[in-house]
Image (cartoon, rainbow, N blue to C red; front, side, top):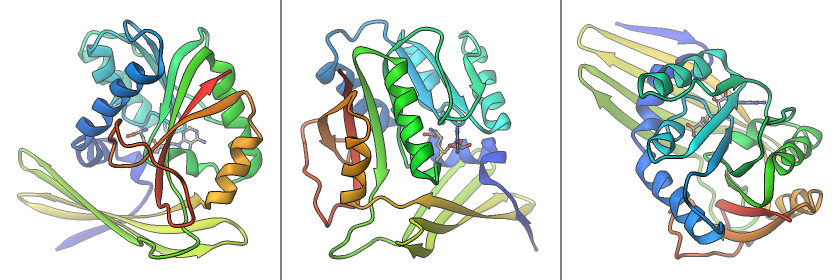
Length: 261
Ligand SMILES: C[S@@+](CC[C@H](N)C(=O)[O-])C[C@H]1O[C@@H](n2cnc3c(N)ncnc32)[C@H](O)[C@@H]1O
């Protein structure tokens, strides 16, 4: 029998972290390659992740000798993140805050926000405020690595993705399906399902996530509204530092590297 729960997937950090945490290597390697390519120095950096969630990347960057911190709106994710940082001997440097309204105590060398977290900000005002907060948090010459899906205005569009991961007796299969895309309101609605299996139980967690839509043109418009951040590199979700790409009407995913002027 399956127990069906309607809820917020981010309220289940253990399951979130199992699925998305298993995919850390490519992003981690890419972030380090960005630090090497776009920053003057790569040693002992101060790094910040707005919308850090469970901090699957943060604690590994701390293990590499960097000073890390992050924020997230979700208290449970922040608690999970801090517990893991402490378990590995680092300060519990994640805190609860809104990524469109924050300041940092000490300016950072780099900030990063991958896998669409930024698209949780559903208005232009919140998105621009976020970009300005990030710009204010960066040292001059510091970088912001921002990964998001775009909505292509030509060609094929991907509407479904699956992930799966297991540890010990726990397995979590995840699927995300776009159920609607409203270009006028700029809202993309996605059905998110976590199927959670233990030897004795199958639970299904169902959620709906709303993302703000960015077409190529809308992304360019956003970047123009934050002139303090200059676009210095465009990559994509293949996380290949040597493959720089250009954005056109077919582009479905980008990882931007923005530098504080
Ligand atoms: C896709 S998860 C990414 C988490 C983490 N960055 C990672 O890579 O695993 C998106 C995160 O954004 C957080 N979030 C959504 N809206 C937010 C907001 N306005 N301010 C801060 N965090 C927010 C959610 O709580 C969730 O943890």
